[in-house]
Length: 182
Image (cartoon, rainbow, N blue to C red; front, side):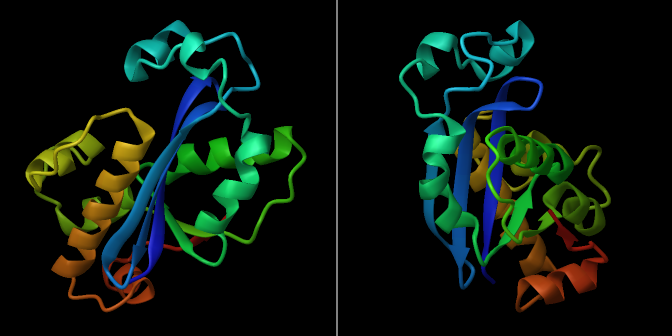
């Protein structure tokens, strides 16, 4: 059971201002980390986005850009399945950042923990990160990328455990969730 959970917070549109990653090996979270990112739209920060995550222009003024962070981020992502809660959003942000800085898109296979939770816990009224985390008593600082990525990793592990899956591909097969390519 090996994968990396990813989460982005954005400054505006698809311009990331924070990334969180949680690496899972053999069913155990072995590392979690987050980085503030100086967004390409700096110093502009969308008011509504800032209201959600609380990250301001001042917070990212001395942060590295996505391009400058990429060499540190890439080992977390390479040769690993990625999972995100609402993967369409996070993969769009990742694609956008790679494209903006003209960075080569690595071979990435990913899946969505929202889709997975919908298959496993059909009875829940919502499958938002907050609702599914609350159901599993996962405490976290919502809308901060590191905490969101770790919550996503924990939810994914709980779903695969409920399915009695031995690995990611088996869990996806049992749930009917599709593995996608970036």
